[in-house]
Length: 282
Picture 1 (cartoon, helix red, strand yellow):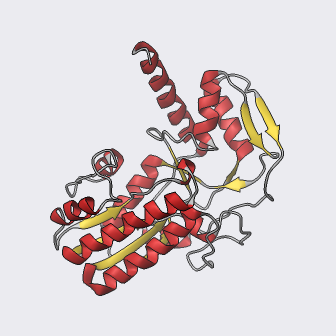
Picture 2 (cartoon, rainbow, N blue to C red; picture 1 turned 45 degrees about the horizontal axis):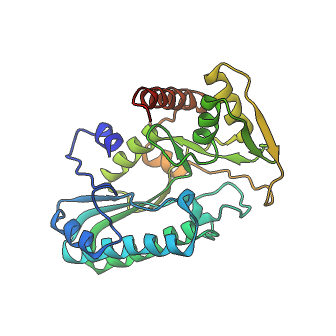
């Protein structure tokens, strides 16, 4: 919410975090409806992340969130809905050419399935009068300050480097992924929310990196040689390349933070958090 608020000064941002409301509960749907009206742009980021456990239970909880949002839209239609979906709808272990918005959707995780189903459920709710326009945003991995999941990639590697612990690298680290810094993601989401674009767009720079690139960026930020332990991959190696043509056609002047700079920002933030926790005795 803070990143979105910083990304725009043209409208008031009212955020509801999971600490404030359990959007999987029916009560939350009623409360949300009370905050909606015909001039509202509803940006949906609520979800249980895959790193919290990719299971039938998390799938069910994520679908309850979407169902309740659809209930709120039926009661209180809005001007625009922006749903932050995920590139997981394309299939995280599926080999594609450069992924576009027309690439076949083939979710292979419970998280990806929940995002896929949510896209269609929201589309149905909007067709039934829930909103005047609908934008689906599909980002790859987003990283940056405030992420507590310590997922594989920049957050986990930095956490281990700060603690002086070995970093686990699955395979040779050559697989390709997109990593988007949180402030870039928030700015682009805010800009798309204020546009009149109706449809799906991949929130991607078109520049992918390997996990070796991530390690090099962390080593540069830490200023020390990292301890890295390699383990055999449990699945076949799959690279993720994205075509960013649609995003740049909508936002021709947009830009993205380079991985090295983003990792440096995250390293500094995580180091400061660790120091602050030590001072508090945590």
